[in-house]
Image (cartoon, rainbow, N blue to C red):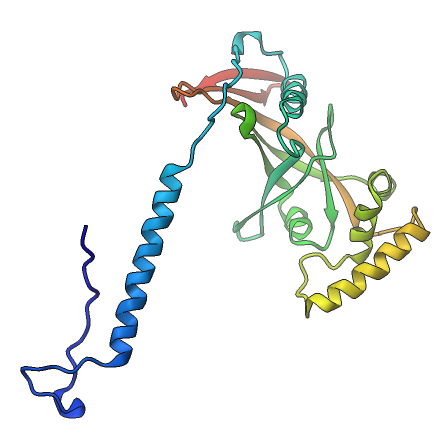
Amino acid sequence: MTDHPGHQDPPDAASTGATAHEPAVHDSDAHDSAAHGSDAADARAFRELLRGLRVWDVELPSFDPATAPDEPLPLFRQWLREAAEAGVPEPHTMTLATADASGDPSVRTLMLHDADERGWHFASHRGSRKGRELAVRPRAALGFYWPGVGRQVRVRGSVTAAGPEESAADLHRRSTGALAAGLVGRQSEVLGSTEELARASDAAWERARREPEAPVPSWTLYVLRAEEVEFFQGDARRRHIRLNYRYEGGRWAQELLWP
């Protein structure tokens, strides 16, 4: 396969000293051409890498949606537990999607703190980007992906902020490192340098060890009350099973979705 050279404007013969029949080649033109060739090779290599990656190169579990419970919470707990037992790293990590006042979305990865009859629990600083966005648009979506078992779960609904006592209890149930990170605060603000972060982190770790109940007023526990929960079981032959729960009329309804 041959590469097509990029378009180049013809050089000015008068300024280069070349004749009209023998255009000069500038060093910068040669450099640009080489750079273009390198970029094209990198792009091809990247596409080949993507196409060569294997998906679900393991034996996947089966899922019969006819055996699913009437509500999504028991199935979610079961799937997370089975992902952990299958050795999926950090199965409690999830993506959280929020949007600002204009509707521009943001997404990030964080930890699930609990899932109960109230909803799916996570936490952050009120002044962080996610905190600011939830303050103006208290709705969010969660995504869990467990590649070792070919499963994912999507959750969508409204979000409420817990009170200061419950939020503080959530933080102080966690590790010393989590408290130290909370004490550093200033999440999503512009950072001047990594040295500034190191100084603030060292001080926060020292305080967290000295005061395991140190308050972090901005720390907030959020609870997403699900209105829709989708369970996806992958299949090597692409006959994926998608079971969707929708909360309507005071009860959960189930439906299968085409993959």
